[in-house]
Amino acid sequence: MKVRLDVDTNTFVRFWLVVIAFGLVGLMIYSAREALIIIGAAMFLALALNGPVARLARVLPGKSRLGGTALAFTLVILILSAVVWFVIPPLVQQSAKFASTIPSIAENVSTQWHGLRNFIEANNLQPQVDATLENIKEQSAKWATDAGSNIIGSVGSVASSLVSLFLIIVLSFLMLLEGPMWMERIWSIYKDKQKMREHRRITSRVASVITGYITGQLTVSAIGALAAGSFVFILSFIFPIPANLSMPTILLTFILSLIPMFGATLAGVLVGVLLLFNNATAAIIYGIFFIVYQQIENNFISPAIQAKKVELSALVVLVAVTIGIYVGGMLGGVIAIPIAGTVKVFIEEYLRRRQRSETHESQEVIARVEKGKLKKQLEQSEKA
Image 1 (tube, rainbow, N blue to C red):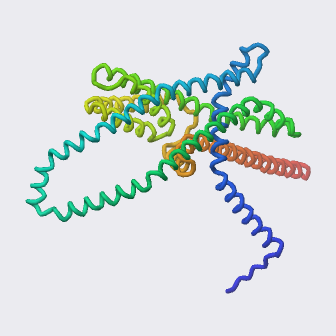
Image 2: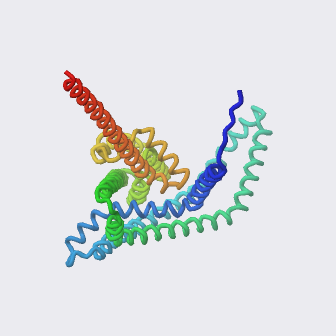
């Protein structure tokens, strides 16, 4: 049996126009993903600083929001400058230390070569060793050839990161300064006051989820960074490691711990490698401390601070972080959880509105049925 579908030409054209429009919008979003990530990061930073800025504005003479915003960003820039000032020298020192250990490693290898050569000759492994050495030479030559372009690419990447950071700071400053004014203008457009109050409530809930997550994550990361840096500082009194290594530890732990799920683990591994350059025992002890602290943070500190801020399952968190990292790198991984929390709020509000509409319809149906029964009873009583 053949079924023939008659589709109006206008309907057919409208359908494909809608499909093309969605495709173009998706392409535009993908093309502008870096700019959207910068705007999103600026928005999250503005939401995180909105509370302190509002409190500073209330305290300052004239309740100037401009003064509160400027003061808050001045403190942020001073903190970032202090961190860079204390972190770069230890990193340079550790890099020089690593470079200075290479000759000693080569010397140790040469002293052990005689015994290794006897082992190779006894087991007829010379062809495999020659092939491996030839491969190493080819890879070294290739790396040396690409070194210049790699350095230029690294410089360009650093410059791009600095420009992105500058844009995030400027956008956050303007959002904090003009945000309340723009929100009041948006609310004043509404003619339906009930709908305005509903949308304002949803917006307030989204802002609460984002602000709660950001402030909570910053607090958890700061506590973990201070604990790691303090422990490395204590180790410097016991083992031959530089005390200023605690500053890179604080910076690495704070930044990487902002990435949910596995950021703290990556920070612990990097700090352990830094300690391993100086003293293997100190690195092992730090590894034990890190494992113990992570258990305390995951079971006590983080739940107490983040208590029901976003309310997402572990699976949703992992999926959101994975998508965020592949789309926007480390910054995308940081903002993935607030975005997932925002989507969750919208879904809950949609389901709530739908349930309320269905309940209202059910009540109307029940009322009509009851009204029909009552009318029927009256008609029967009149006939009687």
